[in-house]
Image 1 (cartoon, rainbow, N blue to C red):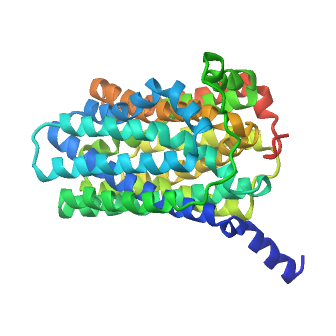
Image 2: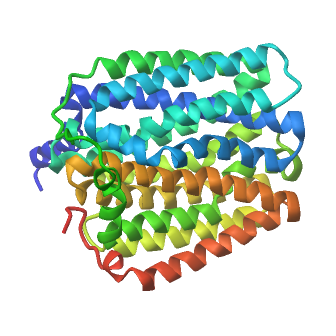
Image 3: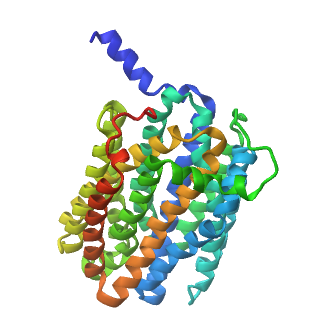
Length: 413
């Protein structure tokens, strides 16, 4: 390959930024993720400081997940019927209101975690509408040929924010708890301005009146399309069992004894691994054996989770978390591309609403599972159990969804 061809190929990888709508969306998304990471570290430390009960850390995730579960039949239909850009702007504004409420609680030096859970429910309701629209709008902002790169670049940038956000959150909270929530509020306001400035993209809307058949179309499509069903359910059960993120405050305080700044570093470790692998995927995308690679990455995620659970040394824990993040990045990249390319645009909102509930179940409900088990049998045993469960799920899904295992390319073929 000539030097000119190399240069053209390199420019092609970042051609998505020539679309101004995608660029604004991308920057707004980075601000949003950065804000969320700062807020997550602050809330985790504040709640555990108030109650010293790992179950409450599980409730932090559950309070954000339940709105998505209860509203799943509405959120996707809204994303398919109304302008997605408008939905994103409104939801970000509501998230900013929730961040302002958390700032007020932090400044008032509250002795109860109940007000925090109340604002998290509001935040979760906004996120329930935000996530399906956010996922569904990307194919409207870039051509189909650029979609895999757009997903890889967006996910890598998200992971970059996930690296810096927890560290910033730990430092800000250690300096002064209200500072963490204040920065979150400011970043969300900036994201609102960017998101509403996106030129209205083309979108195939479901314009007819809502009926049960149309509202439930996302569920029926996922059930009929075994590739998508396998990909979504694999993530659900693997992360539901294997996620250790919710218990990081417990490991930081009681197992590794590293304090709030150390908690930020632990949370960032997964993102370091993810962004490293994400950068590789931008320059060396998956072009063959996509299904097998995704299953291998899920099994690697489970194995490194087991290493983290059993580690009593900080640097081993950090490396294990980084490798977990890298393995998860591969799975997210392949799964996200498959779901977007295999779903018609007029159904993307509803399919992504179901997908986001599955993701929420795997993350937030998984956090509740981990917190409840940690309260009963201890954090190390809880994460060990989950890691073994993840490995078992990967093996069962390889046999149960041969169509997914046989997927070779990420072009909907």
